[in-house]
Image 1 (cartoon, rainbow, N blue to C red):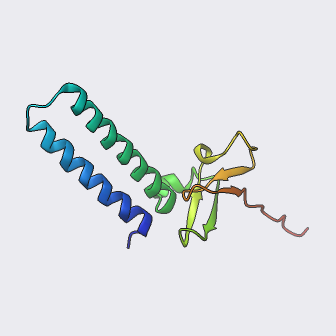
Image 2: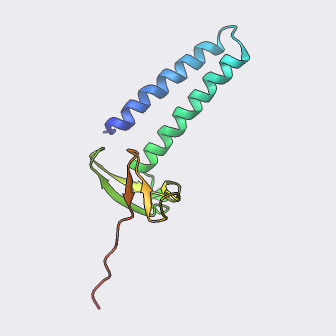
Image 3: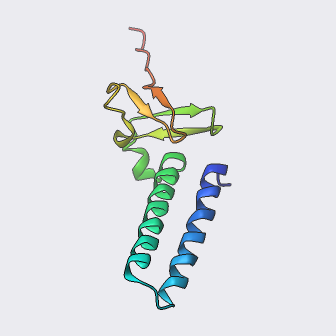
Length: 111
């Protein structure tokens, strides 16, 4: 089952794809076609980021720096190097929901 956030963006992707495909079949300006393609690429990249953060493939899980539960999305999210918010500090991540979250701390094993 897809998360609500992913499902909503998937609907946007399909709409952008259909719109761009319809434009390609008509005589439209290059500028309008380029704008449509840019929108399609933006939504596609957002879908990829959401899919990777919510349902990473096995090889992608290995690249995750941390995972945490996001109350806004109601799901566990995987956090990657691209999610680090360097403007605040290297120990904060930008969650898929847009909120800054502290890097999860791992307690040391007792010796």
